[in-house]
Image (cartoon, rainbow, N blue to C red; front, side, top):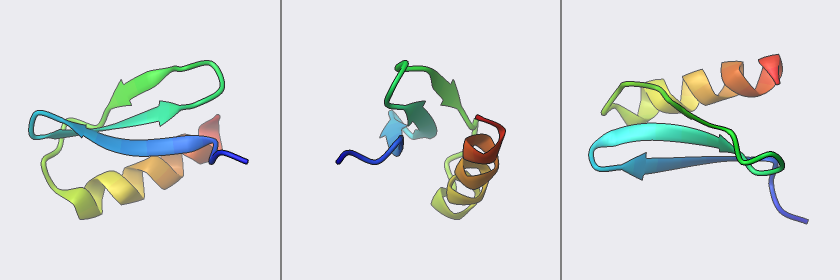
Length: 46
């Protein structure tokens, strides 16, 4: 089973993708630690 959310980098900026509908959102940060924290918050809003 695939994970529901995926963290990836486009250029130097981190993004998160909800794998089911394919929704993507930029975190506007180059710092992986901040992006990982934001992705947890983003997933809980889902």
